[in-house]
Amino acid sequence: MTTRTPLTHLLLTGALLGGLLLTGCAPTEEPEVGSSVTPQPSASAAMPPSSPGGKPKPSLSPQVPPPAKDGQVISITGRVERVELEGGCTVLRADSGTTYQLMGGDPKIVKPGATVQIQGRVRTDVMTICQMGPVLEVVTAQPS
Image (cartoon, rainbow, N blue to C red):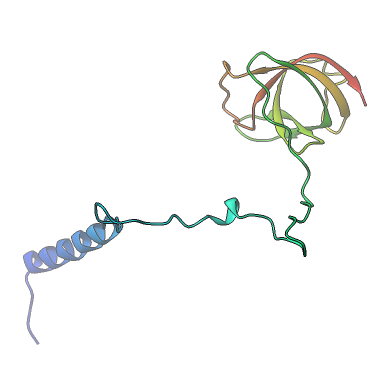
């Protein structure tokens, strides 16, 4: 049996770790300049399946409205929830499927478990720790 010195062990370990690091950083294949590559659609961009006659089948998922613009006042209905993340956040899970992080509002109305209708202003100029969706500054709130 041969005896290896600590230096040999160190060199072998370094070579193995270096090889593993380089393997993880291998470049991806890129097409040659001048060659034509047809991009493949991703699963999320796939077209809905067609029914006989070539018409797309209707989607079963709820229609999500386009995002509101900064400062735009919107009216939205949903359920208030308390998310215990980074000290806790109050969010509105809108009926449309969108989640908003709520800012302000009467705590007697805007409370966890309540279904409410909120008139609020979308705020993109505000950053939060929770990052639970766009910030919605409550202008008015009423039980729904």
